[in-house]
Length: 76
Image 1: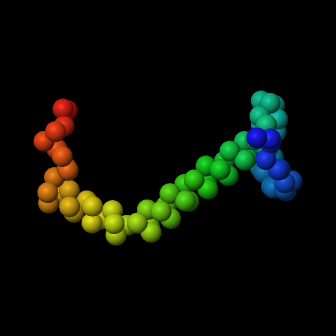
Image 2: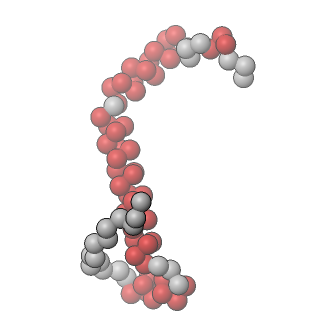
């Protein structure tokens, strides 16, 4: 698999943050991409939890009422 296509973009950063990143040799594009990827994952997880809140509540209620399925076979 080759490198995915990259798209140039513009962003605004605090000058002191940018200066320190450059002094430390931080790859700003890579760091920004990593931060955006982390934000996407977090938002997808939040949306999933929101969309599945009913099923999660139902499952938790079932566990509360009946216990963990197959609990008698657990060795811990």
